Image (cartoon, rainbow, N blue to C red; front, side):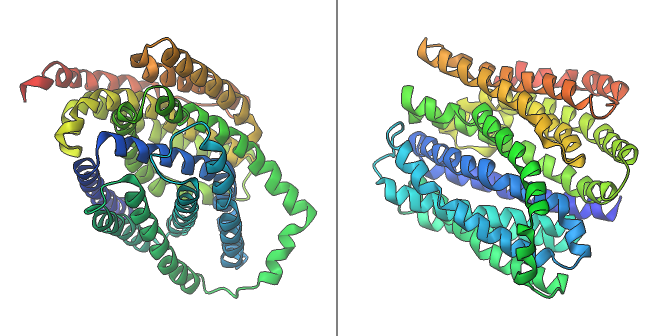
Amino acid sequence: MNKTLFLLSVGRVLQIIILFLVSRVMTKLLSHEEVGFLYLLLSISSYVGLVVMNPVGVYYTRKLHSWSEEKISVSIFLLVVLFIFLSSLLCFPIVFIGKFFIGLNGYTWISIAMLMTFYVFSSTVNNTLIPSLNILKYRTSFVVLTFLTQFFGLVFSYFLVINNANAFYWLLGQGISFLLFFFITLFYFIYKQDEKIDLNYVTKIKDETKRMSLMRFAFPVAITNVSLWILNQSYRPIIERYIGLDFLGLIGLGFGLATSLSVAFEYLLQQFYYPDFYKDINNKSKDVREKVWNDLFNQMFPLIFFVCIFIGMSSPFIIRILADEKFWEAWLFIGFGMFIEFFRMTNNTLSLISQAEMNTKETIIPYITGGIISLFCVFLTVKVGFQSLIPLSIILGNAVVFGLMIYKMRKIYNINFPSKNIISIFLLSIPFVLTIVYRDSF
């Protein structure tokens, strides 16, 4: 086996074990209502992270190899940290406005805003820097630091929640771990890069050309991410307002576990394929970039398809492993969630075309359209009392994004679908249907 794949696979296995422990402990200690409130808080943090910070993080990843070669990657990252800190303060006005539309579960808006600011900053800097180690091929360090962040996140959250069983302290424990291992990683990153930190040089990024390059790249990503949040996160405040935290706890846990499991797998693929992808498209012709992307797509898409079918069909058994008994009825939402995850992961892979060509505006229309459709359908189903149709509303929105992304990206690259592999995987996956039929026999 490829040594790199083996190392990354070991790291993913360890992280899945932590995922199992986190989910079991969280669902054991927290009630349906508190789990629902936790996912509501995560929807707030993800809004700030996706809309404001992620576009700059994506740009940093896209340019990391170039900046590393120029010996300015550390200096640029310190500027990114400052940007993340200032951006995290947006949690205050967002929570202040949000308190008029959603409940805060008995907390003051100031306390929630402070928690959100801390969590958004710590999680964002951690999740920006540690993956950078993998992009630069510091594989072992990446695996170890990622695992330690998640492990101590569980430890800190457990000790904070054991006597205060609420979502507030659970999220606080996660944030403490993110921040601790960010600082450890930062010192390691500075040491390994062996660069002179020159913040005077970094001010040159204010140069008009570079600023406009960043804006042309990041602004469309931000607009796309607003739509992405509406597409996959806006159901949470709607459910909290019109149905309640108890139901949000069930659907949030089901969708959350689907996302966690698929992200664990997706990150393994990204960690293995993305470093070479970003390196191979750096300063290359369009024809070369098109071939590099198609090679990536033909390797990732069949694997994504297979894993989504496997996890979706196995959800009645997965929920018994990952959650306390009082949450077992959430298995159905894991199944629906894997449909959403299939489209999300595939759309992420398609969006790499726009990133490779520095033409991110092409993703705006697909995500806006899908987001509007999803939001409208979710709101409609809630208002008329058909809450069981909420998952189908979100799946529909994601499917629309997928169709429009194919249409848009084919204008940039010729997309070669691995049709034979897809058919083979579909046929091999048919026996998984039996897991649904016999779910009550075990």
